[in-house]
Each structure stands twice: as C-alpha cells, then as structure tokens.
Length: 303
Ligand SMILES: CC(C)(COP(=O)(O)OP(=O)(O)OC[C@H]1O[C@@H](n2cnc3c(N)ncnc32)[C@H](O)[C@@H]1OP(=O)(O)O)[C@@H](O)C(=O)NCCC(=O)NCCS
Image 1 (tube, rainbow, N blue to C red):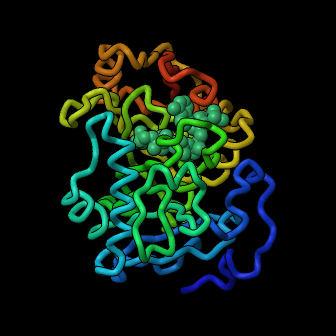
Image 2 (tube, rainbow, N blue to C red):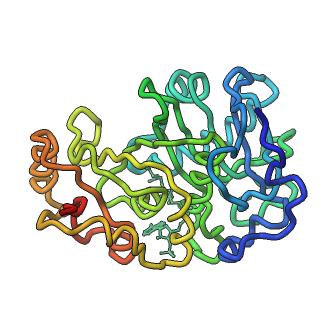
C-alpha cells in the first residue's frame, strides 16, 4: 500500500531543525537510493513521521553498466575514508554483502554544482550527472524487523576546512536510509572512540549488545542495537537533553575507556552473564571528546 502523499510531493518548507543543514534545500544536493530493482522498498517513508526529505531521491541501479561511474565515486569516498583505519571495503564485499542483499543510501550533488573543495577530492568521471557525497549501507537480517548498518561515511571526513563541510551529512545519510526503508530496529558496529558514535546514538536509545569483538578485525568494536524512533533525531541538531531517556535509564558505575581494552572485556562479560541490558547516553557522548570515558546506563527499576 502506497501512502497517500509522499513527503517530496508538494512540501516546500524545510523543518526549522534543518536550518543547520540548509544545503538540503536547493535541490542540487538530493538523497539517492542505489538499489537493485528487486530490492526496492515498497512504501518508502511510511513508518516514521518526518518531513525532512523534501526532494525526491535519485534512483540508481547498481547492476546497470551505465551506473558504474556512480559506483566508482562511492568506492573513492569509501576507500579514502576507511583507508587510514585499514577497513576500506573490497569490491566483492560491496557486491556480495551490500548491493545484492541490501541497498546504499546517501546524498548526491549535481556534478555541475560540485563545490571546489569536493571537486578537488573526487576524480572527474564523464557522464555522471550526479556525484555521491556520502554512503550508508544497510542490509536486512534474518531477525524480523532488524536491519544491519554495514557502512557509513561522507566526504566531510576528507575535507580539511570545516567551512567546506556540509553539516549533518553523515547523520542525515543514515537518517534518510532508516526513514526511507521503514527500519524498525537497527544493529550496527563501530570502534570505541569513533566520531560515528556521536551519530549512531541519536536514532533511538542505543543498547550495547557487544562491548568487545575479537572476531572482528578491530577487536575494540562496539556492537549496538537501537529501536528506531524519530522522536530523538532532532536532538542531534538542537543538542537538547533527552529527558525521556533520563527518566527511564540510570547511570551505572560501569565506564568504558576507549583507550582501555579491559573495560570493554569486563562489560562484554557482564553482557554474556545477562546482567544487562546496558545503554549509552547520546547527550553524554555529544558533549565529550572522543577519548573520554563513557558511562554505561541501565533501565531504572520500576517499583
Ligand atoms: C563519522 C562520519 C560518518 C561522520 O560524518 P560527518 O558527515 O563528518 O558528520 P555530520 O556532519 O553528520 O555530523 C557532525 C557531527 O559529528 C561529530 N563528528 C564528526 N566528525 C568528528 C570528528 N572527527 N571528531 C569529533 N566529532 C566528529 C560531531 O558531533 C559533529 O558535530 P559538531 O561539529 O557540532 O560537534 C565521517 O566523519 C566519516 O566518514 N568518517 C570516516 C569513516 C568512519 O569512521 N565511519 C564510521 C564507521 S561506523
């Protein structure tokens, strides 16, 4: 069933929250969906009430030979963003684990309108009307309603001067993908101390389901799960304290020190002994430097 009015049909006014991300307004930067036709989402945006994405997405088919330059741009951004941490995505991973089972979402800029700072990073590719600036890869899992966030990166991380960045590009790329695909629950992973944690913690209360992952190539990886709720998304921009979180969750004495592996292993053991569930506080993460210790929270007991 298709919802009556899609947000990009007739909506002209940008939510005031997105004033910090005014680059969304003109239409020269638009969301994109890179998905094979069989995987296309039936009722995009039907689950979460949100009026942020005012322009119709650009649709691309990753299996079409004509779209190879678009895919090559994605590889460029991804390779440069993850190269330094030795996690650049091999091409077969993109194919086998991303575009065949799931899809890629993000924002793309009309190539003729690319700012000089971005043009300097991306090689010229003739025939590309739109150039991707970010990517969020998400894959459905065997657990009904749960999707796995596999990759998130943006061109912002490759631009030295902050004034050349598009504020919120990473956050909004993930927000768009979750909203578009009606994602109910999202599991993902990142490294403790990563700036990405500041983004991931704002899509729904973030439960730590794994605090240490030696099976991963980077053992100091947090695995998280969030029940997606747009109620807390705008706090990424406003930096408002989430009173509902504080009313329902309390700090424990457990801290994660991103520089101390033992703190991760200790929490992992507690999770395995079913002493949780354990959560992170988005407001606390937003206010801290990446190397600072993070408090672990748990649901308050209701008497
Ligand atoms: C992490 C990443 C996706 C963030 O995307 P982005 O487009 O730079 O970030 P956004 O514009 O959406 O959000 C900006 C906010 O993110 C946080 N942030 C982004 N980069 C940061 C950094 N290097 N250090 C600290 N905070 C950072 C800040 O909270 C910032 O807001 P503020 O300046 O008001 O404090 C991007 O930096 C990236 O691609 N990094 C390399 C790949 C990577 O590590 N991906 C995450 C794997 S899960």
